[in-house]
Amino acid sequence: MMGKEKCIGLIFGGYSNEHDVSISSAKTVFQALNSKIIKQRFKVKAFFINRDGDWLDSDLSEKILIGEIERDTIKKQETVCQKKINFLDGIDFQNVDIWFPLLHGFNGEDGSIHGLLKFTKKPLVGCGILGSALGMDKILTKTIFSNLKIPQVNYLVFENEDLNDKEVKKKLIDEISKKLNFPVFVKPSNSGSSLGISKVINESELLQALEKAWEIDSRILVEEGLEVREIECGIIGTSKLLTSEIGEVKYESDWYDYDSKYNSNNKITIPAEIDSKITKQIKEIAIQSCRALNIFGFARVDFFLEKSSNKILLNEINTIPGFTKNSMFPMLWKASGLNIEQLVAKLIDISLDS
Image (cartoon, rainbow, N blue to C red):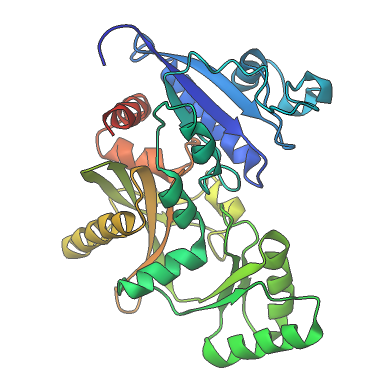
């Protein structure tokens, strides 16, 4: 990318249960884009979306990123889209050359923002609409991987069941107890950062877990819990996908829940202490699974490695992984030779080549 600097439209926050994580990720990327190393190449225009889905203008958005104002102190009338037919009216996005959406979870990682940005006819960093939607939906992901014989834990799917009905509740609990071994994990099909997920030790805990997941999504996934190691692999690229070093997360909590994912006390090992043959297989499955879901740009592919058998089990793919200081994705690439500034620049270059 020679010539004049490119304007990066950094979108963050969002109407999502991962709003706070998105802000933290955006701050990291904003700092990288303003570093001495790559500042000559890029300028940044920030776009903050509040918890109500309202877009703020660039000046207010940047002040949130640099910490001049707190996002929760902004008054409702300061949002630019209140009571307007065009909710982007007043948003100055005409000069943006490349979009960098960092909206984790709903209305972002699920492909919604990608669909909106497609109408601007500008490239964006990350995945397209289809790959984002599939990667976000745990049930569709499981179904596709099952058809491709990609190894996964045993699971059950419940779609659009009425948990207000006592007979329905009983039916679900009976089926889970009969077909899966405890412990099990109960998950909403569409969510991230482990929000809405419960670890269930016995049948008596199932109802509460199902209701918790149902609050987020009417489509519920229940997975068999195994004794596993948490293994993760970063992916970048388009026609050619590159894999990072393999990393392992060891956490103090009982399982890798929301608090664990953003806890600095986790022990991160990169490269993971695993056999070279297993490392090779993980990288191959990571590429195969991303190709199957049309995922490109960047992603983090999460695996389980069963402790008793060393069997590789694909868990999920995150198409907008976190960029916080405790996030695995930038750490994986730092260990692979790309610091945060180089990684951000590389992702932008990939978007221009796609």
